[in-house]
Amino acid sequence: MERKIDINNELLNKINNDLRKTLSERRYKHSLGVMEKAEELARIYNIDINKAKLVGLAHDIGKELSDEQMLEYVKENNIEIDNVERENVGLLHAKIGAYICKSKYNFSIDMQDAIKFHTVGNENMDLFAKIIYVADKIEEGRIYKDEEKMKELQTVRELANHDIDEALLYEIDSSIKYTIQKQKLIHPNSILIRNKLLKERRTLR
Ligand SMILES: [Fe+2]
Ligand SMILES: [Fe+2]
Image 1: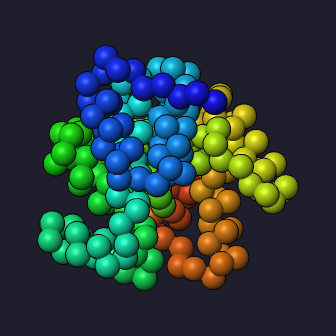
Image 2: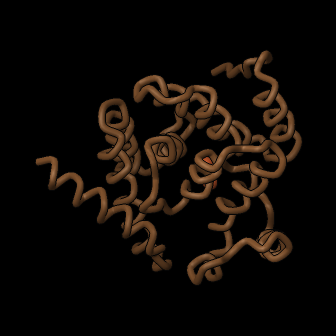
Image 3: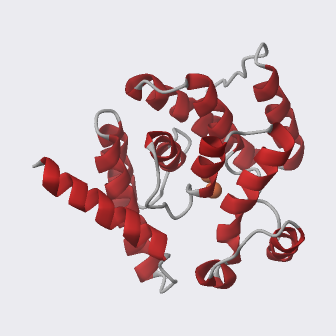
């Protein structure tokens, strides 16, 4: 699929050029995929399309730093690191990405938060952050060899078109399941957002 950046959007263009230089081809394509999916969802849920595209494109800007570089980056910039991140340093790409986008592109707080929350979720996610989280997981470029995983992906893609909370809950549940399978640490923020979504669902029913 041919993906084009709107060349009249100066900041989007700048981020695109930066990413093309720094990310691997695979990750760069993923970033374009998330930008497109975020735009699509922003239209459905009536949120700022430009913001969705910018954050979708930039969300993994910190992802290809090594563990050592990430630890150095958080230390240098006084970014707080929690116990789970200390064990699973890769998770830090979310906080680091938000920090880079604040300092380099002047992203607003909600844009920074959407990047911060895109790996393990967070109880304070707003609609915008939910859209970015889900867009990251269902962008068109995502393909799994595992049939079961592909089926789950299809389910979230469909859910996302009409109920972002259900799509998010489904996605958080599968990532918790996956984390258990891998015997990795579950981030408490994933549990907190899951509980919140479940409680909200019950009050709606
Ligand atoms: Fe990421
Ligand atoms: Fe991503």
